[in-house]
Amino acid sequence: MEARLNSNVGSPGLQAALSRFPDKSVQIRQLLLGRESFRGLCDDLAVADEALGRVDMYSTDLREERRREYEELIEALVQEIREFLA
Image 1 (tube, one colour):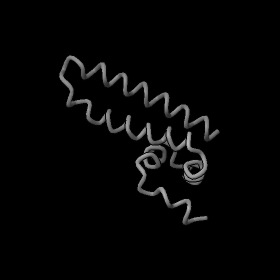
Image 2 (tube, rainbow, N blue to C red):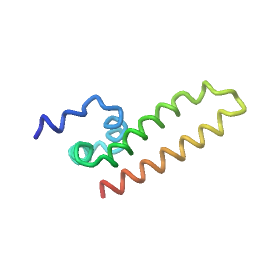
Image 3 (cartoon, rainbow, N blue to C red):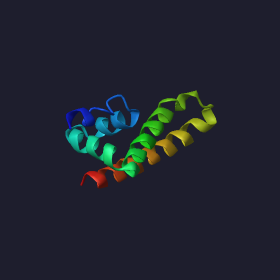
């Protein structure tokens, strides 16, 4: 089972979830293996994190609007992941 739990070690979705819920590592890994919808949430979170990290590349007039949008998206995704972990 340990090998299966480590199979997503390099996954951006796994890393995004673990960065917010480090104490839920085993549960996150199990959900990633068994629940496609959870895996999708984690992958979406990783993409949103990456997009937020590039927000400074936007023109000044779009930068803050996009930053807010990505932050709101990340907050919503984190909440959905939290519900899976409850």
